[in-house]
Image 1: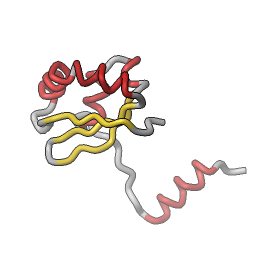
Image 2: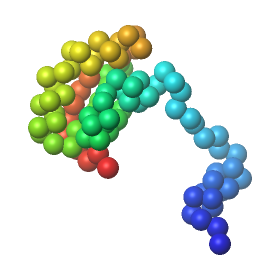
Image 3: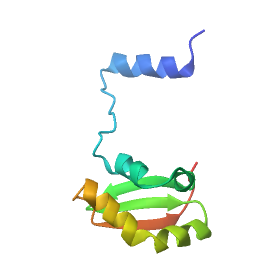
Length: 95
């Protein structure tokens, strides 16, 4: 019996759609390298548009914690990518 994952993969291949892999310089990958494992458990990459990196946070306490570290985090991210201009945090679903 074929799994759903394998079925979807074969359908996508049959349609000729190329799967995108995250490049090493994408904002989502850079963000994962800049945060600790504990912090990564409470956030989710939302979008990157016009130099603004949007991150969903699972609670108001983590929103506050990351907001306090915003300038340091932004400095770490800018070292790896000059395209990142600002970070916006919002409370939302992270799973």
